[in-house]
Length: 200
Image (tube, rainbow, N blue to C red; front, side, top):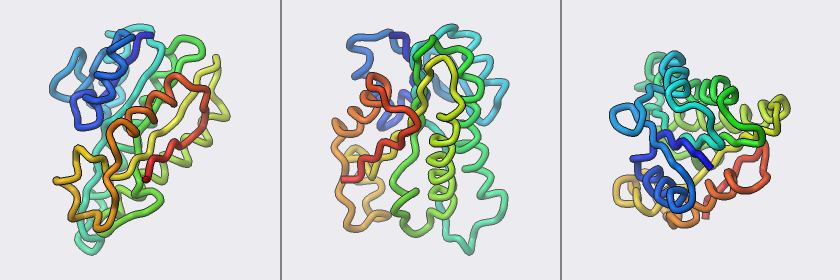
């Protein structure tokens, strides 16, 4: 397969890229480095990326930002970071990317445990993740050409444990192998309109 991984140089992305590269042609897209550059907040940039790459069998997005801050300190502009990046960035990847996928191809988005089990300072991130979960279930009803759309929602991954453990007291870090397998399930399996949760 020809697979595009957006955010393939990140903590999760590099493990997912390494796995799929063993038996597939994998291209990495990023904002500042990669085989192709993309700013997912800009639909024109997304279109340009797909035009450069051409036909694909699978798209995996492990990118998108949201502001973490106390709710009382958040202004409207702070919420728009997550809305423009992680939410609409991924929605636009589906909206535009479906036209560059081979029949029966797949698109996998990324969310996280905050949609179902939020912690403090995550009102924006939790909101965006939950919105993507609803989007996945709805857009799956309208996809054509056998194209499948799923989301992977992980708890705090083991490779980011030291960085984020203070935000997630009592949470068990998720082994990276489990996280990678969730993306394998989405790309190589038959799930459609599914939020693939790995929370323990």
